[in-house]
Image (tube, rainbow, N blue to C red; front, side):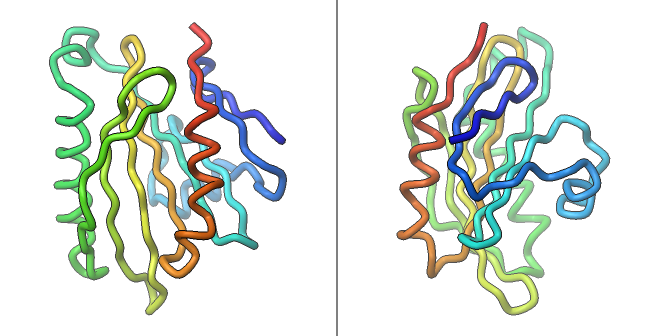
Length: 158
C-alpha cells in the first residue's frame, strides 16, 4: 500500500502497481502546465486517477456547493469532448473524507478505445479538490473496488 499527499492537505492510500506520473506525463496527458495536479496510473489495470486542486476565495468556496462545481465541470467537459463522443451516464453523490462529494460519470472514446471517467468534487477549507478516475468501460466493474478503496481512504491533514 502507498500513500499520496496532495497539496500537503489531502491524503489517500492506493495499492501497489500504481506509479506517480511525472510533471511531463501530466502535461502530455492533460495538455496543461497546471502544477496543481497529482496523478497516478496502473497500466496493467488501465486505471488513471488524478486530483486537481485549486485554492480560491474562501467566500466563493462557501458560496458554490460541490454540486454546483460538479455541474459546471460536467458542462465544460461536455463542450470540450464533443468530438470524442462524450456521453453523460449520470450525476451522483458519494461519501468521502467525512463529507458528501458530488460528481458524475461519463464515457468517451479516444482513437477507437472506450474510456469511462468518474469525477468527484470535494471541498476542504479554501480549496476545491476534483478527483478524476479513468478506466476502460469493460474493466469498470472489476476496477470499481480499487477506486472505492481509494475514495474511502481520503483524509485531510488539517
